Structures are given as C-alpha cells and as structure tokens.
Amino acid sequence: MTRHDEQFVRYLHAKETVDDRALHRPTLAHLIDLLEERAESHPDEPLRVVSVGSGTGSMCRRLLSWGVFDAHDEIKYIMVDRKQGMADQAAAAFAEWSHGAGWTAEPTTDGFRIERHGRRVSLTYVTSDLFEAMTVLPKAIDLVIAHAVVDILPLRRAVESLLSRLTDEGILYAPVTFDGRTSFRPAHEADDEIIAAYHETMRGDERAGPDTGSDLFSVLPSLGAPVVAAGGSDWVVHPPHDDDERVFLDRILGFVEESVIESDRVDDETLDHWLKARHGQLASDELAYIAHNVDVLAQLE
Ligand SMILES: C[S@@+](CC[C@H](N)C(=O)[O-])C[C@H]1O[C@@H](n2cnc3c(N)ncnc32)[C@H](O)[C@@H]1O
Image (cartoon, rainbow, N blue to C red):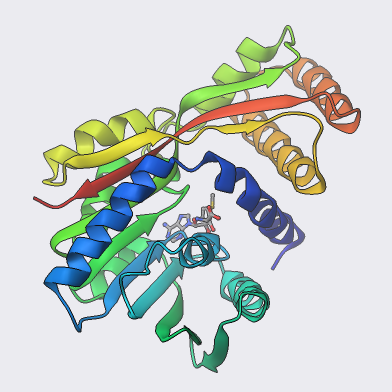
C-alpha cells in the first residue's frame, strides 16, 4: 500500500464513528424486517450478502454488532474492493474486532469463519473491480450492500450490475450515498467557489455526480427495484473533536484539495488561503462540517 492508501485506511477507520451516528435507523429497521421475512420464507438457507467497495469491512462488523442479521444462523458474506492491500487491512480489522466481540475466528484461504452463540459467518474477501466480480458471482445474492460508494461509480451501470445477481425479491442497501450538499463553518468568503468546484469534480462519465442520493430515487425504480425505505444520513462533525474526527476532517480537507487542484477551476491563491483557514480552524477545534447523504433501501419487484 502506498502512503496515500495508508492515509485512506486511517480515514476509513476514523469514519466509522461518524457513520455510526449518521446511519438512518428507520431504514435499517426496515432492512431487519425484510431479513426476518426472508429467514421465515427460506428456513435452513444461509443469508448471502455481497458488499461492494467494502473497504476495511466496517459495515459488516457494524451490522453483525447491531444484530441486523440475527434472524439468520448462517451468513455468507463476500466483500469486494478493487484496492490492492485492502483485504489485508480488512483481515486485521476483523481479527481485532472478532476477538473483542467474543466471536471465535478461524482464518480460511480468502477470509475468516467466525462463530458466536450458534451464529456462523463465512467472510470472504475478493480483490476485484465490482463490475467484474458481479459477472462471476452466481445469481443467488439476497442482499447487496453498497456503502459510501455508489456516488463514485457510473450510476446506471453500477445499479444494473448490483441488481443483476440478486435473487427474487433481493435487496439493495446503499447507505451514506452523497447527495449534493457540503458545508463548512465558520463561513469563508471562498466557500461557494470552492464547494461548487469540488461538487463539479464529482461529475463525469465514470462518476454518478453530486446528486447521486436523489438520483437513486429515479434510477432504482426504472430498473425494477423500487425504493422501500430511505432517509438522511448526514455527516455532522462539530467541535470539540475527538482524535477520529480530527483524522476524518483532515482527510475531507485533503479530498477537497486534491480534487479542486485537479479540476483547475479555482486559482491557487484562493485555494491555499481557504485551506490554510480550514486547517487552522481544525487545529484550534473550531471547524464544523456537514455533508448531506442518504441511505436507500430497494427491493426487486
Ligand atoms: C469511500 S470508500 C468506502 C469504503 C467502505 N464502504 C466504507 O464506507 O468504510 C470506497 C471504496 O470503494 C472501492 N471502490 C471504488 N470503486 C470500485 C470498483 N469499481 N470496484 C470495487 N471497489 C471499488 C475503493 O477502493 C474504496 O475502498
């Protein structure tokens, strides 16, 4: 992994508590209801889950810890991420978590088998582009999870691909999908220019664009998967910051810097001035940041 990748992994770890607070609980409750219905209608079958753009696997650990899969005793969970080295990062995170959370863990060739209170979970890590992975997986997935990733993919193609391997009445859960609003406080005179440039960098043939959360409400039904539950999962980070929030905000400022530099839409002096002010506010525990995201749950008709 490069230094930049390591920084990204630190950001993913720091993001976990921000996501914990942000996730839209009624949408999660609806997911639990659907999974309970499925367990009743398909007794003795494992729950088959694929998580794409899974990073270090935080969503899997969270959903297991929060009891979201409790209706199922046997879970087969595949995590797909294209970044080389991410599988090792996920393995390390799972080893630490499973030990602390009282699961017995046994390494397998491509992941772990964990067990607790009669619940068995096989975790498999696949290093691959998700579009390729979806073509080779059997059409037998009950739940696809796309956490904080749909907004960086070509939207229609991605949704088509994610729905393509679902079973009848299969479920797509897309939590923390960015939806068009970023703000920092205290206000700065260059905010409008920089945030507009930042959002523009999210457009392009290979990216879903800054309004992905809203766009899912038209793309999903048009592909035969109406939205069955949804709600806001805004990131709201304000002072005083803990260590994770400082790491998280520092990387968010890094994302803004890298993308705005690449876009060439803001002159260097304005961007430098803005970044200096924002990093100063982060160091003096004054910076507040809000990003509007949505959690979307859809089910095949
Ligand atoms: C913003 S991160 C989110 C990670 C994780 N879901 C989380 O929220 O902690 C997006 C992840 O998607 C992965 N990714 C992006 N495009 C991908 C693709 N086409 N196929 C597989 N993984 C992809 C990246 O490598 C990255 O780890």
